[in-house]
Length: 126
Image (cartoon, rainbow, N blue to C red):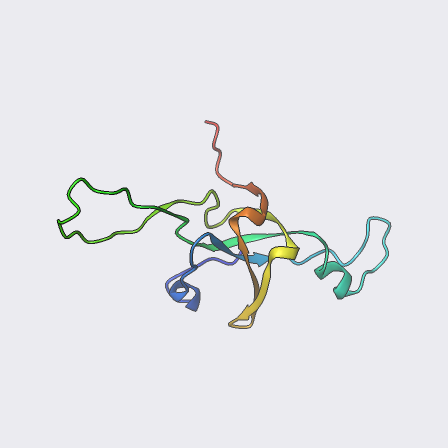
């Protein structure tokens, strides 16, 4: 798995809103029966999987009206965090993904709503 560390350039990337940066797993180039598939077929499948590299802050939450509207306050945006976390294996819909290449590596950016399932390596049910 490819991780965000202090010595690589991924640390400087900021994912915006409810978006998730995913490094796709290399798809299998063979079918179950052993036939080889061209890359165009495997890249355009509807459902893909990959590792979550970076996650946006989440969905913005509207700020509640204050009792004293004349009082000047600093508006701070609050976010509802996303379910996905860095390091998760995500199963996502390819049709909503935006393909990009950064530092010679292929990535996709997908909205949280396109992620169908997450697999987390830590044991959540202890």
